[in-house]
Length: 264
Ligand code: PEP
Ligand code: MN
Image (cartoon, rainbow, N blue to C red; front, side, top):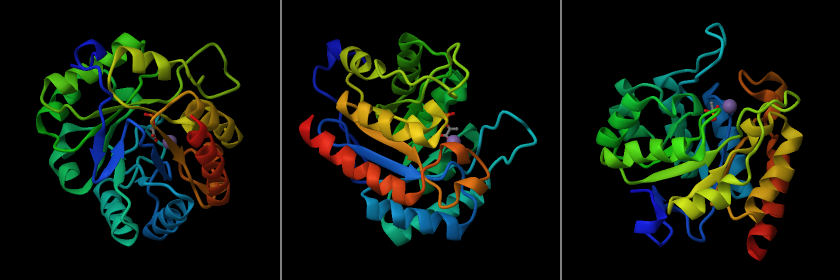
């Protein structure tokens, strides 16, 4: 179903009125995790002013350590909704358990399946069957293109055709960076499938100063969007502060990205 051979045109996915794919760039920004209402509304307003067209924020967080902040849960989703009311930005948030699908259908506009759940096949099937919103499927930490595409296929074959792929860096022998951004994923995915592919340079490099050069390269390579972590106070963020951009930096970045997108 994802195969380009049977569907030559690019798919364009509608996320609460924001189109992704074709000539439309998804510009998703926001904190790694929802921390408070004040925080999310402040970041959402700054992101919107910078030109972002969607707001991200994790309410359910897949943390490596069980002792790390696990997210605010459903209270976090309500905070995202309040930010949507203020700014009009559609909401992107990660779903970790099928238990919450109906709640996400009500509150979230683009449902993220994280890297760690890319091959949680039962979750993929439930999301395909029951999720009424488009899905953002992140690439697994060490997933091949074939494995990643097959995970999209699980969702599509189970009844939800609206899948956007997200490259977020893969694990390599390098330890200086958090992961290694695979820019080749953009032309490869576009050749093999008709699905939009966006790039998350924040989780790829793990360092805020790597976000700008990699975001620019990704747009030059023809990606369909960028998901970037933005935080008002990265030093004190409860999750992923070192890779988060301050709103001023994000604003500068989108100006430069806009120029590149214009040429491409
Ligand atoms: C995230 O987007 O905050 C996240 C946890 O991403 P990933 O699943 O790519 O690690
Ligand atoms: Mn994060």
